[in-house]
Image (cartoon, rainbow, N blue to C red):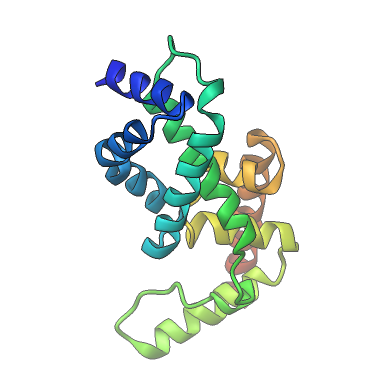
Amino acid sequence: MRNRINNLIAGIARGNEAALNELAWLISARMLSVARSIVRDRALAEDVVQESFIKIVDKAHRFKPDTNGYAWICKIVHNTALNMLRKTKPTADIDEFYDIAASADVAEASAQSLAVEQAMSVLSEQEKQLIYQKYFMDFTVRDSAKAMGLSKSTVARKIAEAEEKMRKYMTGAGQQ
């Protein structure tokens, strides 16, 4: 399979349209799966796959035949998905996403939601964004680091600090 993908990429670099069609038939479902795991939306993931094929055609001449073509393609899809997320930032304000409490009791859920909202108010905008990415978009530390232009260690530290700020606020608020 690895050799087949590598040969198809080499064919694409030579302008072979049949190689592109075969590659699409062979791995487009896997590409869609990678894209969906990042963008969490099927329509957007389909756009990512289309954009990724354009990049594959444009960059096929740079592919090194002795490397893993499947990994190369997955990296293109991954980066394209992250770029697409940056372009299509959530239109809703992050402050609107406080309904994370899952409870059958509406009053309890409302109280929990209010507590989380108040706890979020002590965070900086960057911290709010990192918390949003982690808990609502299922970003990994690596994804957030790439999206925010920070190192992974900085992102991990900032998330831990934000969670600690929220924990302290909620613990203090619960004792009053």
